[in-house]
Length: 137
Length: 134
Image 1 (cartoon, one colour):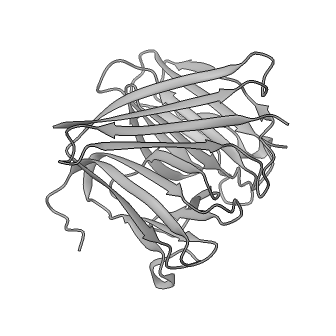
Image 2 (cartoon, rainbow over the protein chains, first blue to last red):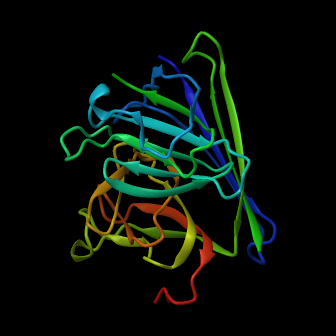
């Protein structure tokens, strides 16, 4: 059994009069158990030079309805460059330069279309995405 | 304009042969945002089933970042995020969280395994003065 933790910090000194300082840690476990997720893609990077959609993780390649966790980051340093993140045909939103997302993914292959993790770069110049999937069989 | 600093660290000594130690920091320009702690009202998606609105469509422009944390100690007490058309896109187990961008034009709702589960959530971004939350 592996143990993987995710620690999130949200802070701001100027968003509200009361400084925001949130820190939370979760141990990433298999669905419905306290057993740690034991498989991962590792941390990878993918560079694109087109504005066509890229399937980062195909739901059909993973077991449906498990405790998978996705990390994805737009490593661009150009403020206007973004990736549009989607789950299947559902648009989540944009990750601008330097932004990241972390979320559970159920790899649902029963939906239409499959709940693939897809992103579309906003530019056709080189744009690199960093990603990791921690998952279970 | 304010800055929200969001960082995540993924760590594991044993999920790979090489230790996993990833830290990523993002400084998000935003002018509004707040944290809310509230009970889950419904156990099915959709407004008609009392799913709680965590983001109201068009409240933000361009950038809207949603944070949701499931405060349940029981991992099997899930919280589900769904979009306007009531399509569930994330299932958060007890004790876990998500930070995701959301489409500013879509309403996001949350429901749970049980009513009265407690969620902590917040949306950060660029505010639209055209939409009132109540």
